[in-house]
Every structure is written in C-alpha cells, then in structure tokens.
Image 1 (cartoon, rainbow, N blue to C red):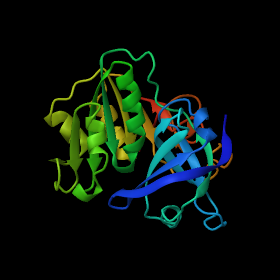
Image 2: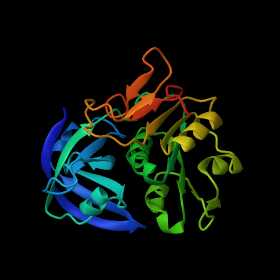
Image 3: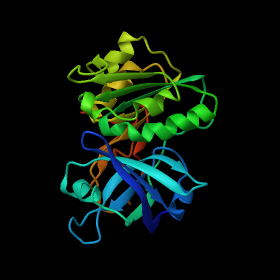
Length: 254
C-alpha cells in the first residue's frame, strides 16, 4: 500500500563527493515488499521545488521501521534535501522491485553505476540471506565518488571501476566483468541506460533484471513523464509503476 507520511530523519551525512546517506524512520517501512522499490520525497516544507524527488531505497529494517536512502545532491531539490533535519514528507513505497525469491542457480552478479548502486545493496543482502553467492561490480566516475565498497564486501567480492582510472579498474563495469571473467547464473543491474544496454548484451546468455533511472513527475503513473519504450504489444511502459525494475529483454534501447 502506498502511503504519504512524515518520517523522522534519524541521520544524514555525506559519504562521497556530493553523495548523501539519509536514514528515515516511520511505519511506511512496513509497506516495502522487495528490494529495488523507491520513494518520492518532498524535499522541504515549502512548495519550491514543487515536484517530489524519486530516490531508491538502499536498505530497510522492518523491526526498527527504518530505511536508508542514498542520493546525489547536485540539483536544486536534492541540495535542499541535504539541508533537512527533523522530519520529511515521504510517499511510497513505489514501483516494482528486484525478484529475489526462487532464484535459480547459485551465483548472482550485481552491477551498478553511480547512483544506481544503492538499490543493489538491499538486493544483495536478501540474496545472501537466501544462500546465494553474490558478486558486485560497481562503477563510479572517480575515487572521490566511490561509496559503500566496504558494505558490499561484507556480502561478497567487489570489483570497482572508475572512468578516470583513479581507483580500481579504469573503464566501464563491463570492462571489469570481462577482465575478471565474471560468471553468474543471474544478473541484477541499475545505472545509466547505456550501461544497462551493455550489461544486457554482455550477459545475454543468463536471465537478469535491470532498474531504470528516470526523471518523473507524479510517481504514481498519472503524468506519463517517465514512459519508456518496451518490446511487445504495449510499446511503452511507465517506469514509476510498471518499473523501475524490468526483466532482461523488455526494454528497447536507443
């Protein structure tokens, strides 16, 4: 069930260059059903900016009724969010998530690019809890942008790539997958569209799920601002309600 709720801000801190981690608490957490869902946040108590900001759920704890979000503070709305204390207005949980139950095979590779990394953390935790081996390939622009490496290492092997070569492997996440001969039975990916397209091509022989990063207005499927092209009779789907997670082969790239 989607709720609109004022959630308590337990903590907020910067964890990498322009990257913030915020922990929220409230009953809305009880409604989260799977990793990969997101929330729509009103970034302040005023009406400027007017639109909410979609932010993926990095992890959650239903016993404590807490969830952690990670976001990049570069636009007017997210910069405003980074200044908030006390409580914040949250709508959610929204969208589909990553299927983690009844996964065939023993090994999953999780591939994230930039701000697409956060939703993979809860996905990895839940796969690990189900006895799966998890491998992570995480791509960033530079060493200053890297975050959560140690947290992912607690769950399984981690390969870091940076565009400028200042940390880890220089290049793209697919470069690391090839260089280190990564083998898996299923993949989960989140990041920029070109990255998702490349990941699908590289891992064409195994099933997988990808999560789209998309600008959106309402978050509930009414404004049609976040439609994406898909294969099949429908031609288009809404990222906010039909996604953000789609099965491999569903999306039309380019």
